[in-house]
Image (tube, rainbow, N blue to C red):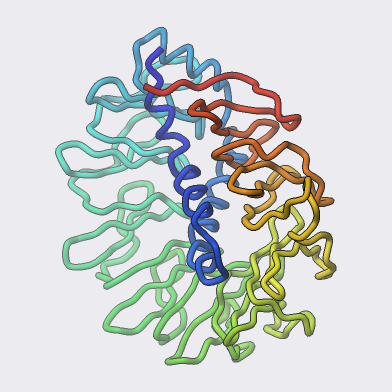
Amino acid sequence: MSLSAIKALEDKAHNFVSHIHEATNIGELENFSAVIDDLQNQIELIKTNEAFFGLKYRLKLAEKFNYNFVGRFIDDRAKVIQGDRQFFIDKSGQKIGVDYDEVCDFHEGMARVSMYGDWTWIDENGEEIGSGYQDVSDFYEGVAHWNLGTGYNFVTKDGGSLNDECYDDVGRFSEGFCSVKQDNDCFYINSKGEKVFGEYDEAGEFHNERAFVKFGDDTILIDNTGDELYEMYGEAVSDFKDGLAVIKEKDSCYFVGLDGEKVSNKKYQFLRQFSDGIAWAVVNEEIIAIDRGENIIFKSGQNFYGNSFNVVSDFYEGLASIMINGRWGYINKSGELAIKDSFSKTNPFVGDIAFVSKGGASYYINKKGEKVFDINYE
């Protein structure tokens, strides 16, 4: 069976794992935080859209119709690669729309597609909303951006422009606002394309009705009316999630609440956002797992057959990957080794399965560490 393109489905996660393998100190962990955050967003998208719907069914489709690749179903649509052409099918296997040079997964009911170097978007029926775009983004809150060549503008799902402006740089819409840059000033626009507030050097996304902005070296916490709530003494290294954000001040990291105040007097050398109720931190060069009350649950010095772990991933579905002597396994939220450290690569659990590699073979395992089925690449 030719399933080489299934590997592409997991490439983002594999790249993440490869980076984490190389992380040996706090500085490198900080550099990889953006990679981890991006993967975390992808995992949440996967959960929401049944990413692993009918994986065996997808493999059977690839075999039956001689497809090189059948991707995950998102918005009930899956990307297919056959030779040098790409297109979409629905869950019945019916082809949707026409062939393209390149197609991207659906997001908010729209997918980016390319033909002869030009990009546009199609809806779930395969209908295009325009043509000739360059450097296009996914839709967020019903709005996407594209590059005019001289700058960026926004497009809505009916193909109309949000406004007539040309921006030097743009973010993406979150909680009704989007940060844009024009004439060296950063400010926010609303879903109507109207400027609402701000003249900043940098402006972040809104989460939990809060965003971080910068004036020179100063980091300011603002609310969704533009009011300044708190002047931070350090750099924001994460957005707000469940009412908490991570701040780095000189060589220390700590949590702040929605008011910008520290939630405790505890400081860490390195600190991650919470995932599945647990956050990773580093104290005195040792990795620790903490709960929402910042109580230590367990430490990396905990003994596993005479060894300790020195690299970790975030928790998903109650399990996290850890590295012990160069091999990967999984621990539970009590710090107990749930799946033996025997893999060369691991990925987060999605539902009850995770994609792993061992001895040159790649396959899916369940939460007992048992092989579910193989994926063989050419």
